[in-house]
Length: 483
Image (cartoon, rainbow, N blue to C red; front, side, top):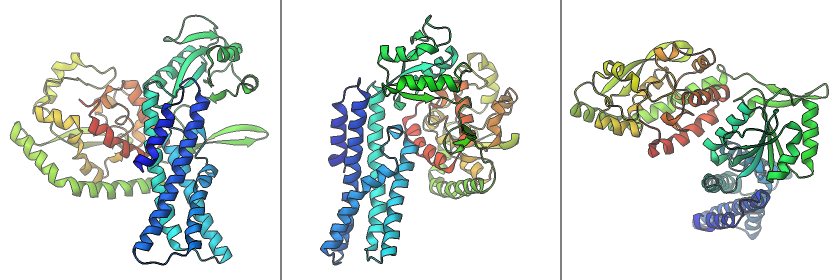
């Protein structure tokens, strides 16, 4: 599948101009259609071939039905919304719509066969569709990663005009620059003061009444409206009308930041569309599932890694004086302190030496970080680079003090410096990994790490946990931001 599907997709992508978003979008959709169809055909042929291998009789009508179902696979993806451009490059959303499309077709075939009393080989429902789903997810994952790499090189990027106050525009610009894989680039701005000083290199082309002119001048294909009181419902409606003719996409950022996904829905009330925001669930069935997942998966991983952990402990003891494990007071859920376990990566009197090094702190917040901390041993530097020093925290997970995924466990002295907003991190259990680790780790600023932790608290789910665990592997093996 790598040769037959991925390479044609890449070839088509490479032939698209970066200045024509609509062209590369159509090309990307064609690649998705071709890949989804190929995945379904491969799944069908694999199932039929396997049955023939075991001596089963396959009538021609059944083989034909398999090909028809393979042709129906892209249609099911389309009904699930898997070809909408808003899911291009967005992993969680794309996985969700692909899964829903595959599940919908499977249910439709099963129910249709039962209602019409049609005899259909169970292999189609029990084997072909699950295999087609796995192949489709893998294909889309590879194609999406290719798209992300091209976007980081400046290709296939949507040109955007940001509308709002200077501080909000600057924040948006910096966010897109930090995460270029989303494919958004601010090329101009409109602010209440009108033309004037640029915003970190972004030209200001006018005020809120000149948005359509700014879009035409820079040939932008999208507009981002940031939260500001000057743009009420009437102004937004008129702005949307002015962008209709050019088919310019309009994005409106809600005033409530870092809340997304299933918690937000639009509900019409008295003829007005109201944004309904559900409260995050920190108790109940979802929390029970998370605890169960932590204990089961954590226990299995601990059992599998017990031998190498014993080897690491022996190496630490033999290369520097002191214990193999390092215990430190950390603050967990609800502000309750506990003893976090880590492999010792520093000299034995590291806490005493920390006082002498405070003036060399390279972090911009309440944390203490040094890229070349003299207290770290040679073995410790290796363990830190690949986060092996964190493995003993599996014991904290089994004791219920930590979770596999969550905000980083802070020190008590850090918590004492927290403001009211930052203390929001303490409403969930701290984690061995989290959004901060898969987004840059120690290379992040204090404000950025706090923002990521708060985003996790507001939007946590088991699906998000699985996604973070998946990304943790590449973040750890890359060793970026670990020191």
